[in-house]
Image (tube, rainbow, N blue to C red; front, side):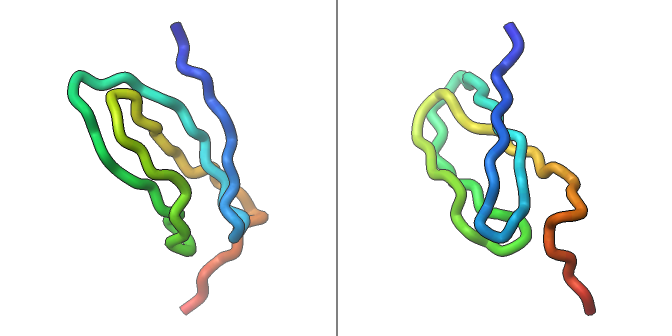
Length: 64
């Protein structure tokens, strides 16, 4: 069975693919946006989210 993939967006415009995975032990964690640091999700349990950033030109770019 293939995990369902959803697309979530941060307020800063960065998008992520989100899937859920079952693991053997309970996990407590959180996921923050890699661009702006906003908290996207908190979890506690044996089913945990997995996030993958989607490359997009719409996301703001950092400059030095």
